[in-house]
Length: 76
Image 1 (cartoon, rainbow, N blue to C red):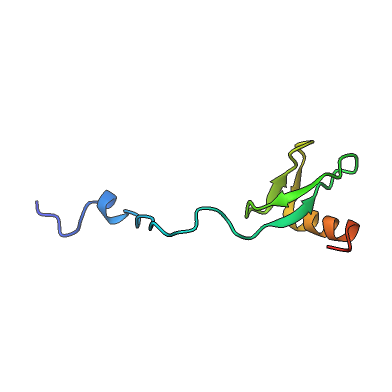
Image 2 (cartoon, rainbow, N blue to C red):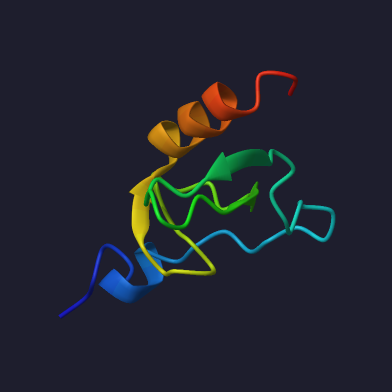
């Protein structure tokens, strides 16, 4: 039996990474913990929709945490 196509594993190979690709995200933003007793703020560069506070470990949505930081720090 002769196969007309390559095996499934060979067809689904991924393209290798290039040497000059960016390894770390360049877009960072200041976010603030939405937990009222904590209110810690830090630079977030994860690129995900959810972030975990490094102090109290509560999880909050990045867009809400960004708005919270901007409303509490109008000079930035």
